Image (cartoon, rainbow, N blue to C red):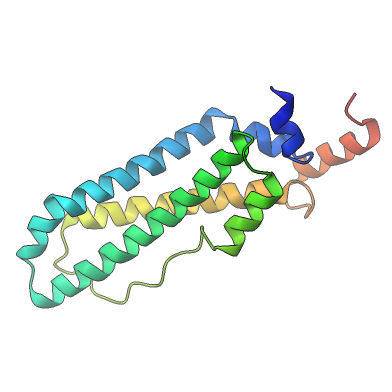
Length: 168
């Protein structure tokens, strides 16, 4: 572990370990793949499929595709910010404040249209996007707790041990 990113992390070594883990790398790659899959679908198959939809279904298709695009990009942006922390380009505190301030993990506005008649590929992408957004929300909540709120007893215990014994 290099010393520079730990110093930038402002004492949150547990969060940094998580950001350097294989699980973070896997989540990052999965979200970026979703963004690519969504863009490819909307540009190719989705474009063709949308032409054959009824007027109401086409309106709902457009609304859902906008919502999915916005949501996927917000989640990807949150992971890019966390990757900046991992790479030592941003402090942990600044990154978390940025993610919360810009509501990167918030669900995009509720879809009010009908899913009836929409292409199954679009609905599958919607399900993937929702699942990954929730996974990123859990990650951000987990990283943000870092023992201060007591939400995670392991974080709290590690914080007490660190306070008692320092960085021996």
